Image (cartoon, rainbow, N blue to C red; front, side, top):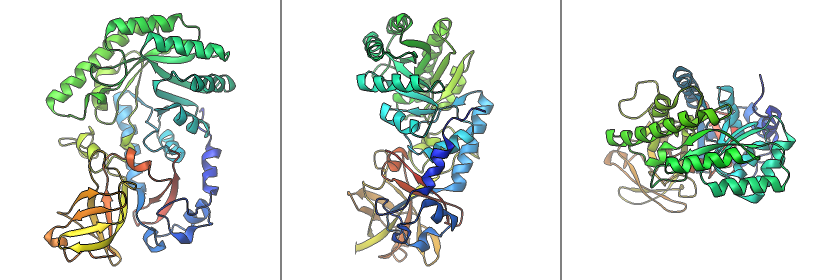
Length: 422
C-alpha cells in the first residue's frame, strides 16, 4: 500500500530534546529527548508541570479515530481531515493509519509544513493566487510524481492568474482544481451557475490546470443545527450536488468534497454519488466540551450513544482567592480558546485524586489569568495551589497555543509528546 507520509521523518520527532521553548512541561525534562521521556511513562502531575499545560487523552483519541473511520465506511465517504486543527504530523499519522485518504490544509504554508514530512495527498481548501506560492507548488509537483494536490477556483481572473504564474515557472504538471461553490453572504466560492460555468470553461481552456470536481463548505452557513438551520444547509448541498452532476462529464477522476465537523452527516446523505465524496472534518479527532459537543452529528442532543468524546483539555493552578466565590487561575487567552466559549471547569485535584467540580464557571479571561466563579459547594474545595482540569471549546484555537503536548493514558501517564507546527 502506498504510504501517505514519510514515517521516518515523523519518527525522528522523538529524538528532539525538550527545553524551555515548550511551555507547561516539567523543568526536570529539559535536555532529555521525547523518546527518553515517553519510555518511562511518567505521571505528568508527579513530574511537576509548570502550569498551565495542555493535554491530550490517548484513549479518547483512539475512540474518536475508530468512531469516525467506522462512520465513513458505513456511509460510503472518504475523509481528508483538516490538518489546520492540530498541525501535527504525529496526529496526522494516526489519522492516516485509521484510513484517511489525504490531509486538508488552509494555506500554502500549511501545505509546506506537511510536505516537510512527506505527505503525498493534500487538499488545499482555498484559492491559490499567490505567485510565489504557485511557483513553489509547481516545482514541488514536478519534483515528486507521487505528490498530488487539489485546490479551489472560484473566478475567471483567479484561473488566469494561476495559469500565468504556473506557465512562467515552466511547471510541467497541471494543478488539479475543484470549482468552489459558496452561498450568498458566506465565504469564498461561486454564487450562481453562470459563475460556475464561466470558471469551469476557463479551467478547461487552461493548459496548467485540470478540472477534477466540485467543492463546498456548508459550515459557512453557521452553527445552527435547528430544523431551519439544517434546511439551509441541505438546500445548499443540493445545489452542490446538481452542479457536480452537470460538471461530471468534464471532470477527470471526479471529486465532490464538503463536510466540516458540524454537518458531515448531511454531506454524506446528499453528496454521495458516482464520484469520490470526500469529507474534510478536522475537529472530530478531539471533539470538545463546547462548540462541537453541541453541534457534531455524533454528540449533539439526540445523537446515538457511542459518539465522539472530548480528547483535549488544559490544566491550570489556582494562584489567588481574593474574595469569596472567586478564584484566579494561571490560564488565559494565550493558553486556551475563547473564540466560541470559555473553558469548562471539570475536576479539582485534592491530594492524589481528582474530584468532580460542578456548578462553577469561567466568567472572564485575561492574557494570563482565568476568573473562576465558584459554586457554594466549591468554596472549601478550591484553594490556592489547587489544580483544576478544564474542558475546551473549539480545539483549533487551543492547539495553536502549544508546541509540545503530552498525551496521557487513563492513569495520567505520558505515552507520547505531540509536536505542532503553526
